[in-house]
Image (cartoon, rainbow, N blue to C red):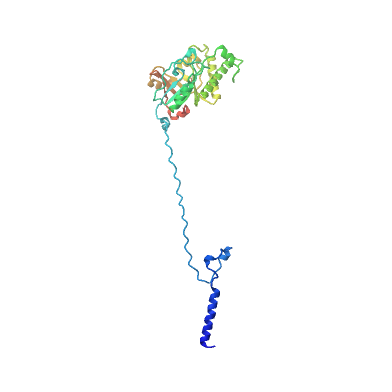
Length: 324
């Protein structure tokens, strides 16, 4: 074979080899690989540059913005829970109900409600004597609630008539076979009756003040020991129901009803038709009537029963009142 022939033969063989190595069909027409391993087989062809993948847009999580807190109107009495000085208040009961309500012996008078400056109101539960409800108790509670005032409760205590004594003499923790025990049970039931009315009217109070004074038409007996048995029964009734107690009176009134009875309870003192200054003076130990500290003092002015806290009381108002 000549050199020219040998060159031609070599070129023909190379052409055949190139034809055998060519791909059978374009990549774009191949069927998808059935498995990941098949797709990863190396080829002898020069690899095309790997295209840079287009990044998937990443959502930036914006922290949720909390809605602003709603505006809260705080009653003024709550802004200053620990006032530094005396706090002004009032007390109401059946005399402040609209005229003509209540039992025949104690018709309501329509006396004005407490002054706008009052921060607390002590609400009476009776229509004079025991076992007679304040005829507008629920309305007075609502009046206090609407003004977001501090509230407490008091109730007049009175001596039972024969019918009431017979009804309750054996209904209580005392020995009803004795006269003093029977009177104690009547007092106990007075307290339960008052608390039932208080709860029915929605009045919340941490304390019930026991009002001990002469009650016109419904007089006390002439025996301070018998009268004291009723007061002791009332005190037991409230405490058994979970209430703290104190007493409302003056030295003269207390002495006239229960004599020298000493209970050592907190005292709410009355100064009559005098002044705020006189009421504050009566907070001192000289005006103590049953051995307890002065907590509140009352005086009458501008046709209203006005009250003021004694020194030390204003530092812990929620011990004595419920905040509406």
